[in-house]
Image (cartoon, rainbow, N blue to C red; front, side, top):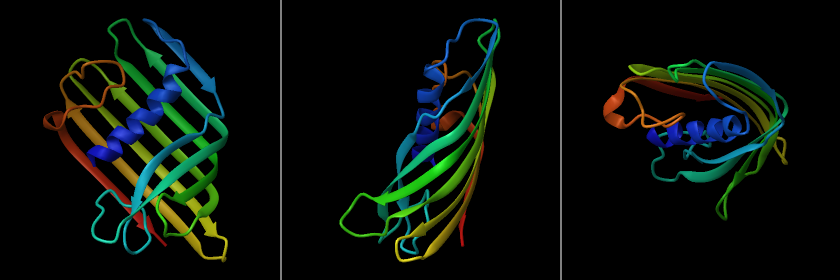
Length: 172
């Protein structure tokens, strides 16, 4: 789960850094910035946050045809960020074995932080196919809640700050 949080926070951070941020501001960005990160697939061929024996590492890439990111920051430094991105998706194996998958995907996510607590949620819907015609649909849903201020803007919480979390991935 910690790896997933780091990946998601890092991806959103890359997008957010491209936007100006100052006290009491609200901005909306329309972008087509590709996002890539490694993700393990379990031995059944499904992305997972709990890789076990037989797991294969893949590079996930979302190249948005449309992306909207909205950020609000108040004078206290509290922030609210929402994002929706939809476009082409690939899963490319990072080892000698595995199938390359390509298709379409959409991610919806939000991040909220103030001096006493924060949360993030993400939903990912992906429909991909292999060159041989196999299909894979991935539905992922995750949420993390924490207490205490983090050391900076868009900095993930430490494990001891997390008060509630879940992550569910389903493949069909």
